View 1 (cartoon, helix red, strand yellow):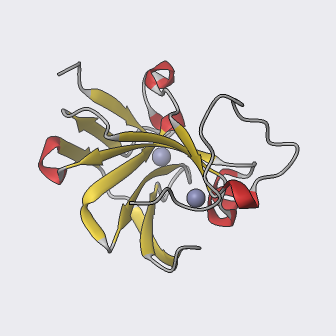
View 2: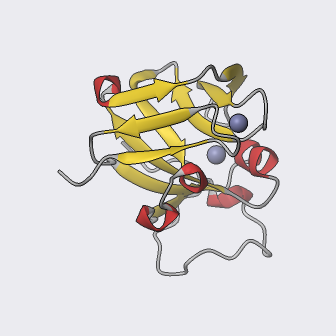
Length: 138
Ligand SMILES: [Zn+2]
Ligand SMILES: [Zn+2]
């Protein structure tokens, strides 16, 4: 196992420490990720097993129905507004953190692109990455 993944919001009120390795690293171009990031996509590291995740600080939570029809919960800092992590009603053991919230964002190595069908010509991603119109098949 590699060193823990640490990070948090811009003002430091929300902090996390994750002692497992990510199961997936994904650029998502869905409309929700565009609105949340303010640009063409959001970048996530997904981890399995909430027991390996230590959270500090009180995030504000907001539920929304994703393009897929699943309910996801966005957690963001009430003070600085930074999106920090996302959880999923249908997959309660998964937590996805925003790559930009890492103390060392260079640890993010995107593996695939989801919801490419919503992508914009101006949002250029690595052409070598496998792209899925929506979610990859399970
Ligand atoms: Zn903050
Ligand atoms: Zn998305």
